[in-house]
Length: 388
View 1 (cartoon, rainbow, N blue to C red):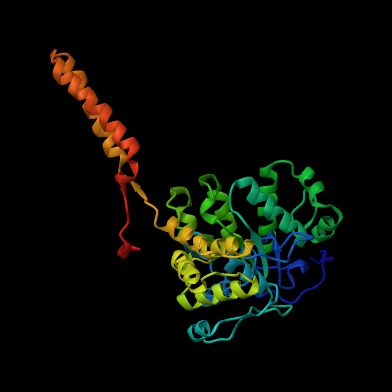
View 2 (view 1 turned 90 degrees about the horizontal axis):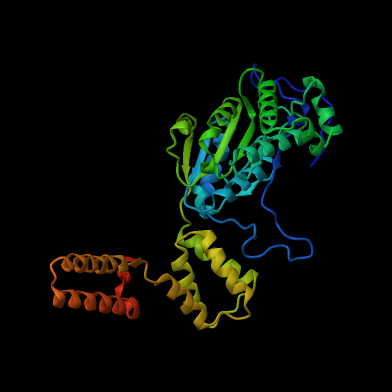
């Protein structure tokens, strides 16, 4: 990452209410992205391989909305690829051109996803991997603003912030801003000065796992929303009353599971790239694709296990199928409550002095418990194959 440079005259701002310091004069992305490997280890594994297939139309729409300064939420199930779309957006802001697959090209009527990168029309993206808890979010934003040279330090004029951020490292800055409230105030002051009383359309705050934000973060998130363009990812829109106003102004882009063609292509790529040997490749492929159901994270997890072994045997494939076909609902509680009822009835019978009935109910309770313990598998509900 380039070190901050002293302020210098820049081109006229795009809108009259926005003043952009030199640190934001060129497209860049800062923040903590997912690691791509460990020193001394292979460059990547099946789990960390940067390949992305499918949902190119969602990336194109996300970039278009970011250019227009619209708050946007990626909504989809866990592991469906929301974080990878945010990482692709960060790469686009940093200057990369993302090539779309033919299906996405037909849908969005373009070949590449790009964003303006001219000196007077560039974007800066700040990536936060997790929007909660409050202290972690504030620290991530504070550190990113410090790297950009725009963090509002105590007693430092706005025109001298870039030099002050270059002189003090983040550890020294945290000594100056001791509490979370101090760092939160510094972040908001930085955004207020950057926006000049309005909203900075060239600053994009990407908040992953935004649905983990707590109710106490509502005010801070609303202040961020007023000052910058926010792009987030959620599994489902939270129904918290304190965050209802915050989420009400967001547009939503659904992130669906991958289509069959994309899942098949991803499977073939991993098999060839990591030399996964299969005793019965056709059977292995069918079971992996069936269990993944278009979710790339599940597919990666299953194929990572196969890549770690020298050979994927037929037993390994049967184990995948067995885990998928396992019983998922236990009817044991019904039988337990039935036995409890017998025990309660037995207690009531004591008052009647019916010794024979008392003995029969006692034996029935004990016998029922033993039958349930020994033959538990017969009390499990098995899913029908035509419902999978």
